[in-house]
Amino acid sequence: MGYGLFRERRVDSPGTRFAEMKQEGLRMGLLEKLSSLFGAKGVGGGDDAVHIYVECERCKSKVHVRLDRRHDISVREDGGYYVRKEIMDSKCFRLMAAEITFDSAYRIQSQEVQGGRFLTQAEFEASPPS
Image 1 (tube, rainbow, N blue to C red):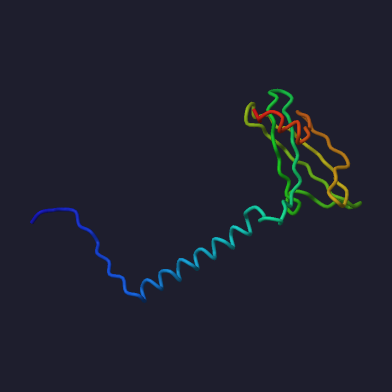
Image 2 (image 1 turned 180 degrees about the vertical axis):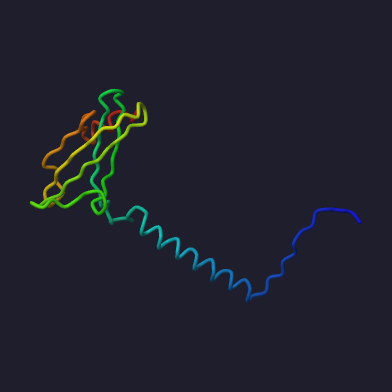
């Protein structure tokens, strides 16, 4: 008796194929729901985040930070919002500490960073991140 490769033979009946398609549709529906929960917003949905840009004072590496309004930013007792964020670049791995206060419309009222400096989006995009 020789050993050889064998191939599984599958016989599809119309009912079996329909059940597989229904199951695949359920999986795709679940994936779409998870994507909508954790993924980016669709067209017209907007990004519910504040974007800041920082440059390390030591290595001059530029870092883009996305602050999610629902999870990263805290409400202040006196109104408005506040965030303290530690940021690390990918070149010299030095921590920078940023503190930002916002008004009720998420407009920056004050900002301070230790170990780096804030950049505008235009400054960040003028040259690629290091």
